[in-house]
Length: 347
Image (cartoon, rainbow, N blue to C red; front, side):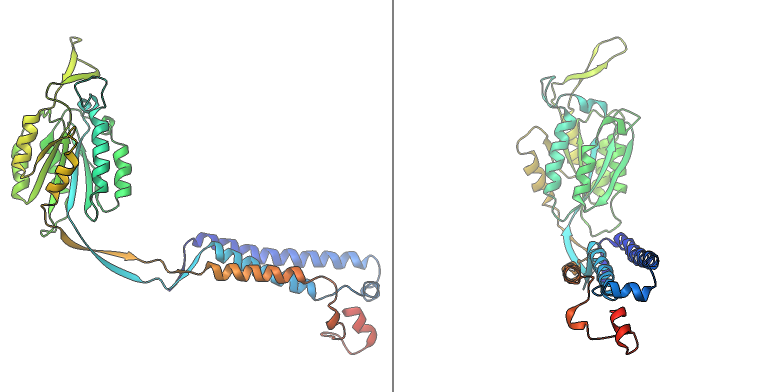
């Protein structure tokens, strides 16, 4: 099997016929100019060292060098084989709260790190620990949205994490039950695949039914672990106030978060705890990893060094080929009849 890493560069091969046409045009122009000085056979005798053949050799070498360079740029590869790899892991759907309350401080101090930023940091570190697992992302506030379907591309997953903010959901509030349902629908239908939902929220649930939905998830074999953000004492929500002008205080509903985790056969961890990630990772490890097959393609052996060498060789030969006659070929006549005068005129 032979292919190219950058096949679009092969369009540059059109330069080869262009170069040949330019050469033909230049030679025709040269002949026309020589005719101004007299008959070609007479003018040829005035240039005894000029060769008719070496220019053809030089343009041929230049064209071959150009073709080799273009193929080298396209990175030819050979010997690519299809491989089937078997990995073992679990499916993890992350339900991320992007309600306005997540803009509040994650500590008792109003100027502390926001709950949103702390959650992003925790998730980025968590994704780095998931190894061969698959991860998906649901964002929610008053409604829910599938932000990233299940994938094993953790680089893309972390890119999505950096973009999380309340503007992703137009309808504000906090509907945890709807987020759990959407996360459940995001899993693959494979029954032998173990699944977990990581709910990241301050648990200020405005709609209810979160505990019942968590129980439904557990009944379907889906574990729910909860990361709580904020403090039970609460803090000011910057930039928000009641219609009466009173500042808004937002608190972590730790009791509800614990109840959701219990109903979902998972654990609750506080996002401010130094052991939050270790505790969560340990809980996920209790789920037996299931085998799933992924098809991957190994890149073939790179062939560009061969074409780079050919291009270098053609250019090197071109340097040593000059436009005058080659001394040891002077006595050889390739295309004219065997007369002394015609021999000298055509060399």
